[in-house]
Amino acid sequence: MKSYNFAPILQNITILLIDVDGVLTGGGITYTSAGEESKKFDVKDGLGLVMLRLMGIRTGIITGRSSLVVERRAKELGFDFILQGYPIKLPIYQKLKDELSLPDEAFAFIGDDLIDIDVMRQVGFAASPADAHPAVKQVAHYVCRNRGGVGAIREVVDLITAFRRGEFGAQNYIPMQLLEKWQDIVWKKLNDD
Image (tube, rainbow, N blue to C red; front, top):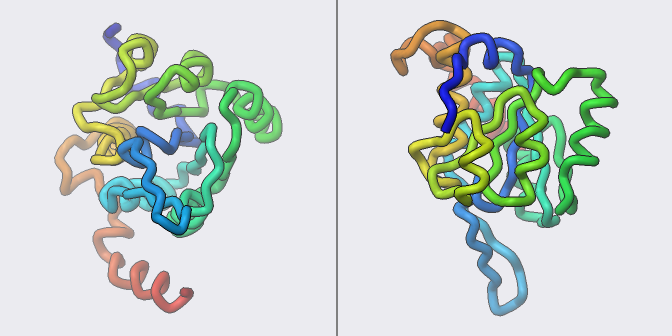
């Protein structure tokens, strides 16, 4: 893996895009006897994505499959872009980029398998979980210590936050709004449902 100076790269990020299977989840797909799909999500990853929104960074999903479970989780977390059913991801990434009139440097992407490589080569910052395919790790700017679905997203969120704020202790880079008013945020969410 190459060595990068993350500070100037991460300062430009305004949108974090992620893959689902193997990134937002561990990659497993479970079907019930009734044929319903279930997935397991990491709550620390979810809180990290909420923290990004509080910092003004938008979030999105680009995934090859379509799933009602993913749609529900994405809405719970307030994703700005939910792009499902795109096994070839580069064209939909290009379309999103053009619609937003943003350069590649404004985007970060976390991917874990071969269908993610094209987008990872385009964006300003690309990351992969620890258990990503070796070819994906080769193109990533950053390879996480954590696996997909088990903290990789939170690790990238913490990295972005720390480098943007220049503070590297956990108590320093959590947005003050979240530290001071987390109860209000949770209660608002519960009451909105």
